[in-house]
Image (cartoon, rainbow, N blue to C red; front, side, top):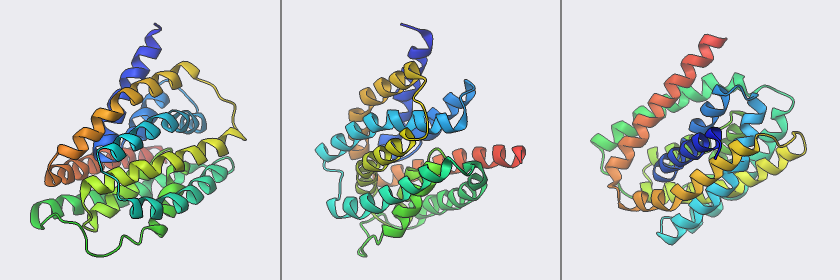
Length: 249
């Protein structure tokens, strides 16, 4: 088995464990890996989206099996998320997505800090208010396409900060992500040639293996623990992205 394929399997496995458990970071992990190998940014986004069709599909089914999906929230996220994702994927072929990264990262750092605050100072419970997630899903789908990732960090973190139950948020966001990702990949298909097949195959295999285990972890981890992990992950990853974006500008 080629070394590159083995490394891709490992990266896909780690990325999906984090994403399926906390609702984010698969795209960040895999994108960083592909960029380090010298892959063009547009192709990075496409490769990750193609692999995510399979990983998010298995992840969504796994979350559904473990009863981590709120069907009402899922439907509220899915359709607007697809619309935002298709729009973002189309625009990425004409406008660089890098210009959005500093603003997205700053927002996510603040959101991560707020989630950490809530986990330590406020009770974690299901919000009595409806999610009203349509504008959020539109934004998350758009930013996910133009930035090479961001559906989980933007959508899941905002819903968590509003007080919704962590495992239901993460399960519903993961389930909707399959349809958002599929729509983006199909849009990219019309503009880019599919390459990097060994890398994509490795990412798919690693992610598919990890997805059922990640869904189980999402179900059994305490809500406060998940909130703290999500908050810390948001701050660390977003601070790194912001630093690299500002250094390159």
